[in-house]
Image 1 (cartoon, helix red, strand yellow):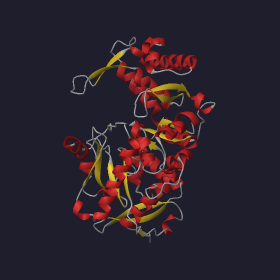
Image 2: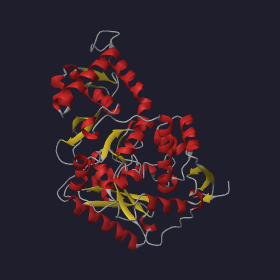
Image 3: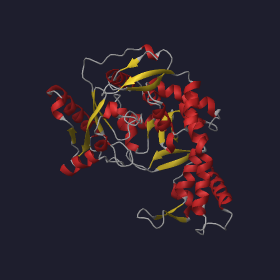
Image 4: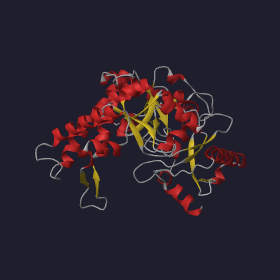
Length: 402
């Protein structure tokens, strides 16, 4: 195999390729290089861009909802991402189209026996409701889910989720229908209802955004292209990393790496052991030495960087249980030279509070840079108050002490 890439070299690649050391690119450049911005929590998109660009919330909103050069879509692991249009088309073909049929079946199974429709009519009911909802949205031009419920009463029918468990609840089927239509590429999220921190949106037909339907792509070719995108920014990465990140089967992952002409390398662990990983052709000759100038950034929860790999010890160490919630969602983190070393939170008065783990391992100058980043974020947010949707144990501890 020949080439071995050290932990320090991997961190140096992360810093440079994830734009943690510069603020000279466009919003579209960052979204493309990170292979999409996580959007399950709406504030993550804005804060991920703040960490990498000199940009205001208003400028981000203009690109998202005025300029329309980015698309919010369900892609890898059924997760919401924001990506440039061409990349979004690739994501949809490579990932979304692979789970659509299952999602239709899951909804039909969910409503069975709940009085939503006659027995045996569940699949047809789902299709009819999707079609009626799309027609109503096209008539209106844009609408909220509640407004569409007036036009399509079936959207308001309620079903029980997880009955008999402590998570059990009753909700309308509207959210599931809108998810299906969005995943199919028939509708898109428009402006939020409120400020940029809001999590509810108006819906628009996809042709309003793209000027036509979402283009079709061959899924095999799309998976190869998406693997290339991922390797360009996240390589070296293991097969397990790519499979987890993409949500593909093991077979699809192996085939995509092969089609991408991925090159095998060894990656070192901090304990001196090594494992097989992959890079793009030519990337195995890039030595990429650690930076001499300390790089500090505050990243939001679900930032693409911390969520980019399954095997995270090389940048998280043994502190993952403090930085991720029980479901594997990352909270807001502090990064020093390509490592996640702590957490941050906004207090009720707007102050950004930080906690650096193993603080004695960092020199005073580095800790001062952390405080400088916190002050910069506090100034950027101004009077806006934020709360991450997915909160890590360390962030919650900080919030309780605020």
